[in-house]
Amino acid sequence: SYELTQPPSVSVSPGQTASITCSGDTLGDKYACWYQQRPGQSPVLVIYQDTKRPSGIPERFSGSNSGNTATLTISGTQAMDEADYYCQAWDSSTLVFGGGTKLTVL
Amino acid sequence: QLQLQESGPGLVKPSETLSLTCAVSGGSISSSPYYGGWIRQPPGKGLEWIGTIYYSGSTYYNPSLRSRVTLSLDTSKNQLSLRLSSVTAADSAVYYCARGAKTSLGATDFDYWGQGTLVTVSS
Image (spheres, rainbow over the protein chains, first blue to last red):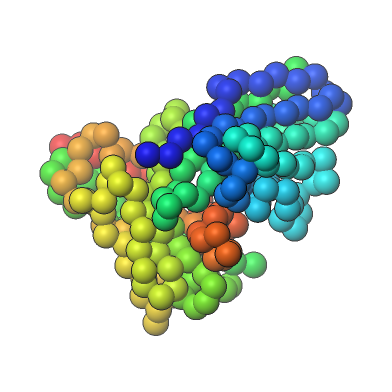
């Protein structure tokens, strides 16, 4: 079965750039997306189709996907960006989530 | 603005069937190119996909749950439903319904999510 691997945690200082990776076999051949989930809240789509931002998502969120790795980049990270982030892909009629990455802003 | 609202029992006994409904308002889930899905999250853990149903009625299930899951779509009510049979404590989780729009590569993301409903399996 297809698997997506994320680092369990990433730390970043306010104002700096945070990068969260998601690895999977030939992930670059599929569409990757990213969700942000704050404590006690539902997931929110922040990047879809590798690089696109839904309406209302700040420009500091960006995405890339090539080879076996998709990356979510948050530029000028703010305290409000502290959350869990999940990557997700659709492979062979199956949807897969990564294990999630806890982003700490300190 | 599209809204999704899950509803159903918060407590289910072991070996019984969990049944949830998701009411969709402010937009469609039963017309092209949309699809609905169910995702669950055990307390303190990550997201797990349960299944996806297209506007056409085609269904796709998590292989690990396929034998116990049934998704359905009521086009007249614009709602989707989940049935999960033979539940155990391991099925205790927050259950989310969500909607997406089909792309050239399939059901590739969910752009709207419900608030989630906690289901506990216990006698």
